[in-house]
Length: 102
Image (cartoon, rainbow, N blue to C red):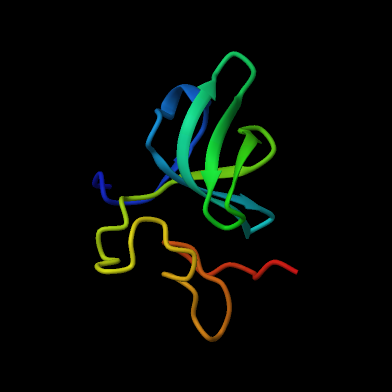
């Protein structure tokens, strides 16, 4: 595994501000964005969710958290573009096909 491979995160102590993450619930992508703050004592952290445009508090024990590589391949689309990984067939994450919301 290289630093550009996605990595499942097991605790908040593995996250730092600026890490790019995706959060899954039952294999459905529900949050994506950069980490803004962590609270390792309670297993919580905040992200700026690019799917909803809001700041979200996430619980590391409730979701599968995956650290993703920086979106270098998105030239011209900007960091964490909402539609950068959306295909006509449905939603995708940076590293696997997932079920669309709704």
